[in-house]
Image 1 (cartoon, rainbow, N blue to C red):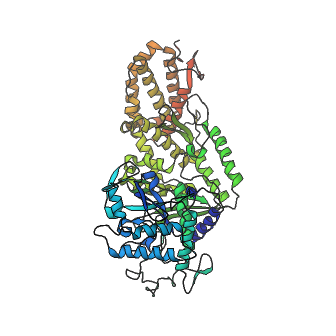
Image 2: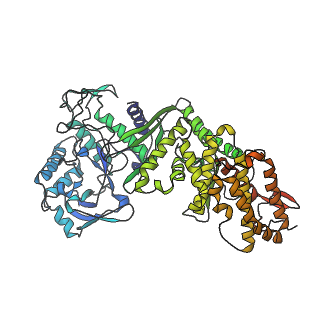
Image 3: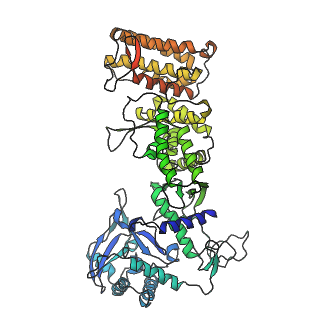
Length: 638
């Protein structure tokens, strides 16, 4: 249970941060709910106006009791903001007990001398008039349709319409109940006073005798997420009977006891961390992202981010005119960025990485948990981004289609999952596979373990099947597959540049494929044709049977060589020289073997293709292009 202690310490650190209202964790004994309508009344409880709420402004902090925050099949009311079935005395077909319970709670709060508040009195006075439903009906609120984050409207039953309050008071700009810090503090103290136990119990986290939590909070990932990390059944439900004999003891005296305030602080801290960096939804399902944080709340790098996101303000590579081994320049940029974190995080800083997932709507599990020191965490992040660094091409940015995301570095785990399984990890049906794949990759990042070999193989096989991919998909998958293969076989010390001295069979075959593709693409360019090359179409077959497929590709190049020879004979001679030079590096017996190529051929292909883009043929030699040379203008016609 050390995660509870770490979150408790994190909560204490959050309290020392100077945060705006919207950035703070939830207050104790409060939750965030989606309100549908906002009713404005005056300080005497007279109706003023009502308006429906849009999605962005609907999330509202409301006071709750421990029972109402955990209600499922009970009628326990929230003390102030509620559904019409609780707060509208004139609602047709309502439950009488709900309204009575809510008004009794409001009366108890309003009648307490020390914790009473003018806004509470105004709401109580208005609800006692029994005309809330009538006022809403007269203002054409019904039938009500709720707006989702995607702009979709969903019908809401009249009794389910949730109301929040705004009290118009003279010379008081803070009219919303969720904005008034004095009201929030008044409810916290009133709830504490009302639930003060006759006999306090020892809290194993704070080491004090306090009020013990009967139920622990939910709504961790979103305001409609009912899954709990710590949960137990009440005296009316099933009880675990393997160890505890006293199933009727609500205080949990035979289990690990945690104070109510302490539990609230722990869950509020976790909720705050998740909101900042944790989860997002896809079609009502949560995509799991592992939450990493420093207990001191100092900024740390996200272990699930790619190098583009990690480097942040560092400028990306936006053109193809940068040459040489990109690994060296990337290492310098990465170390400079990491130095900023190292200057702020001490070697003994407590770093926690936690993964959460829920198999059902009511239960949540901790699927991954690690505690590291600051030096260990930063060292492993650096090792991951360095070992798996490769030139990545993620295609054009949606907001700015003229700009491409091209960078050196490692891909994010979610991108590796997409490269491995394609559209199987997209949408609601693919979330479980996506989450499971990211979970498998995290030990490789946090613990320095090898990447699962099946994921490496999946990526290599998928990018080899080039005809099944869109051009942008192929480019993105190619960079990710090369990155994984390079990092998996880091002892081979692959460079992010063409290695002309590397004479392994698979690497050389990859280089030859890139040159064959370039010959045909240049011939098609001069002919004004835009279609896929033979090398691209046969890439899957080439990966499975390179020797026999190369013969097919070589024969198909005959007509393209003739076309290129008529236009640029010097360039064609350069390509032929390159192919001959690579062929001479093969061991004869290995060249003639038709066994399947490993992912190393993709490294050779990618590097050779990049080299060809960076060089031109001039006076019988290959030289670097200048920055302002366009394709088709750098060709030698000798």
